[in-house]
Image 1 (cartoon, rainbow, N blue to C red):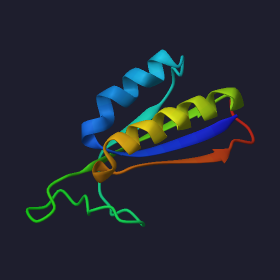
Image 2 (cartoon, one colour; image 1 turned 30 degrees about the vertical axis):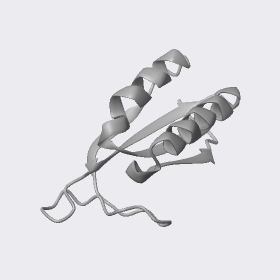
Image 3 (cartoon, rainbow, N blue to C red; image 1 turned 30 degrees about the horizontal axis):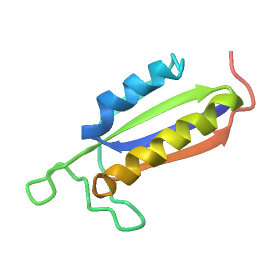
Image 4 (cartoon, rainbow, N blue to C red; image 1 turned 120 degrees about the horizontal axis):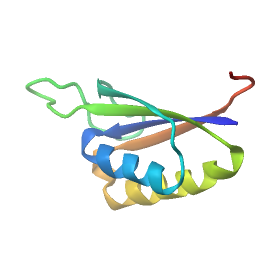
Length: 97
């Protein structure tokens, strides 16, 4: 099992949740209004007057075979609108209940 943490501009939220469903990834947890700034060349997402955009975050735990399909989709989406900012991080899950 793998955990996939997706940090996304709020504009991507609905299409990513829809894609999770189409990839048969049922379970996830999301957080709205996540603030931060990308480590490469992303603009700040602070929800302020000067930097009004905000991020969301989605955490899902999936079987190993679903990871690459999800990451490939996210890479494609990021390439289509790189200025919005989209990142995904994967780590191993050792146990669950």
